[in-house]
Image (cartoon, rainbow, N blue to C red):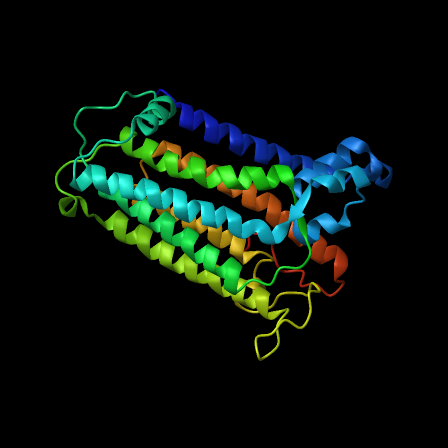
Length: 310
């Protein structure tokens, strides 16, 4: 089996976050004297953001690279605009038979290693994944702007730039999967049970994530909805009774659902899922460790990320 450039990219990214997760787990067992080691501090500064970053004893020069965590909404704004554009280009290709711009064809040639064909058979899976990805980004944008209550937490400039680029590359990856897949017949004739299953899981995971974001916001707001505190509290209710970060678990399920919409046959997209697994596991473990260290009465049965597993 030949691996495309997109496959190599996502697999390498997944390995990087797996290595970071393992390195963090090992670092928790090191003697306390290593906590001030420059390499250790830089590593922790790069993998942490928000409340988990506040526990790191950082040098002043490292704070120069801080940007507000509330800028998370920039990621989803970029995604709504960029992936909305790619969706429009795909619709134009599918229904008006207008080819992609030359720059986009060139990028897809590099990503897939497969030259663009003269004819294109539209794939319902690709169209649905693009639409669901756009809906997911729009919901997260609205949640960041109107639901979430951000404190004065920070993230690293590298994390910010990475987040901006993530959804750009993600949208291109969808089109790479389209070129590597095979569509036959009309869009309606391609409808299958895996589309229904994927969409059902997407809706369920999205509702889980939205409920989690609302519960987190309520920790800082009063009955009137106004912000009363920016302090961190122990989250309760919903899936928080099983894991410390159900919103991260929901994120993983959302990407699994998109893989199902692809029929479960896109290796490229499963590598995206693998990256999301390790990325969200690292973020969840950092939050889980903070809760355990900060609150003596924190429920011991809760896992960090995946119920009953991790």
